[in-house]
Image 1 (cartoon, rainbow, N blue to C red):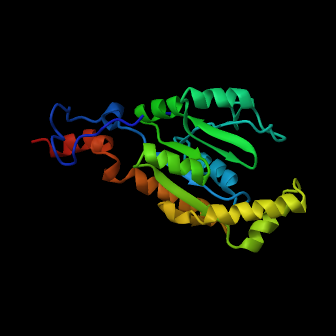
Image 2 (image 1 turned 180 degrees about the vertical axis):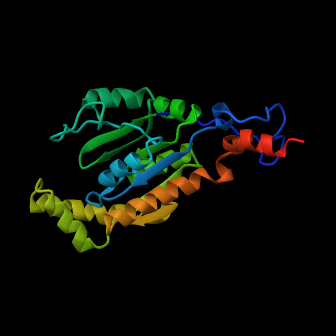
Image 3 (image 1 turned 90 degrees about the vertical axis):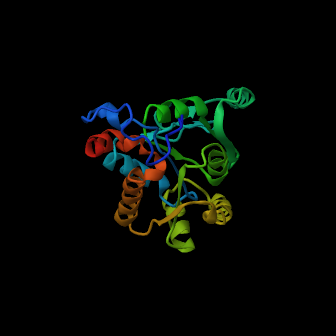
Length: 232
């Protein structure tokens, strides 16, 4: 899970110093940073889990949080569960790429691991809210951002009730929060509507694969191939 290094200008010096044969290292380049956000209940966590099963090379940054683990969650797998004091100490040390407070709990992504993974050429996904996404864009302007929407307000409320975890008062609060979060949709590169799960998943897979083909993310991914094709 892992910095973004600079790439050479497109179309210049692609064959200079490059062997014409192909190998795994010929394609080494900085990884792509993907950010996925959604209001609570939109199905983001399930979509991300299924996406990574379809795209196993896509890494996932594990966030830190001060909230207690939910049933079935494990430390270091779903989140790094930390105390309020530890989280505040990490903020003071500048350890977070982004951090935010949501529903009274703190969430943050460690910067060092993200930069290490990207520098190693790993494509990495951050599952964070709009506040965190805004902070990430300021540090990584080429990050690819995706916002997942529910098909309707009624369906979002239905999904929140279907969890069987919250009172009506809590659900009403989550709906208000969701409406506020969805006002930030225009800050993202892509919108995916999670009406039919399979369709939304297919949309996410297409976005990931298409972004990997963009030269804007750096010709380093293609230098080995281009060196061989363009060699005299």
